[in-house]
Length: 240
Image (tube, rainbow, N blue to C red):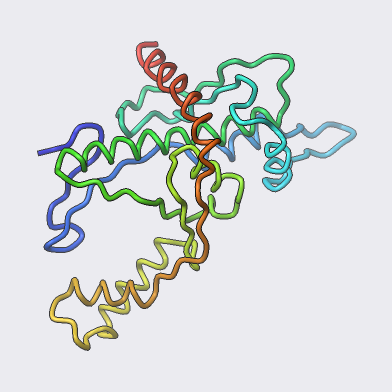
């Protein structure tokens, strides 16, 4: 039986004796790339080449903007939504733009919008696991391009109210493939009675946390207020 607002559960996956549920967003890094390229870059002209700001410079500017972007809100549903609402027709939103907003406000709003989407997915996963008598969401493991931005990592921690951990290897699919390859090659046969135990032994050997970012509780309280607005806006645009 499917659980409301998430995908799954998938019983016996990825191994017998285990099950998992999943959720996600349709646009995260792609929204940042689009915003940087299409909104925050200058076009080439007869006298000047195109100018594309670096992610580092944009993050530095965004770090100077107050939490909540002075009323500017972004919905990162530029390619529809997956969790907790699945709707391919939803579109992205920048709400509350004024002439006082700068490109740093826009960049930070998009960063925060993705974080709000993460919180929506985490809340749905929490509700689903609670309905099954479990609630073990204690931290978020981050991988991929997001790990290159301390600002964005801290935003995820502050918005969700959960600690964010980053591993020594930020390419999770590559690491997972290496783990399964090592198990398949018989590197973890010793003392393991089952395939699952071999995989768990490989994970213990090959997956190592590098750093952890804890949420700032004052920021979480402020973000909760912004997230309430985000939730209302998300519901309001679903019928448009």
